[in-house]
Length: 198
Ligand code: IMP
Image (cartoon, rainbow, N blue to C red; front, top):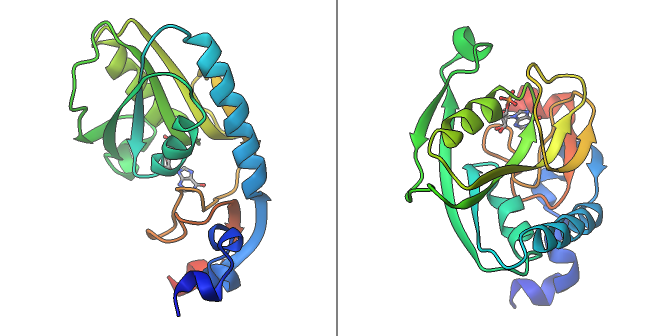
């Protein structure tokens, strides 16, 4: 018997049995995320009509939103990724981040859309934008699926915002806690026990 014989295909993406006891509250259901991405994809298709676009994803969290968003954009697309990490607690507030993996391609003269999973303090995004602007792209805009309300330490211009969420730690849809929960199709908070057990 295959997995799809046991679980109807339509329910496959929405349920991970092993995670179920850890979930406290679903903040953004899967269908709301997909509807928002469809709407943003449509706007991007119109805004960049006649041009080709380079999507730059920030690993690891953005891989899910990048994959889904790209399939709502009806334009020629190229993809590239960066991986970053904070220098650590002492320098976190300075917004200095270390580039663990740089882009594979030159972006000079390109239309670039940076795709982020979540903006918390905004320091990571602020650093990345400064860094990428220095490479002289033709244009540089940001799509961020989630933005925590009231926590931004720097003013940010997010051209394609997804959802505002309360300043709580969230998982799912690419976001992890201890590398788990990234494959949940929704965004949720965790029960306190889930942190203790990890
Ligand atoms: P910022 O520099 O404070 O805006 O933090 C951005 C990064 O921190 C994101 O790209 C995530 O990797 C991580 N992060 C911030 N908040 C959360 C959360 O609620 N869940 C999971 N990861 C988070």
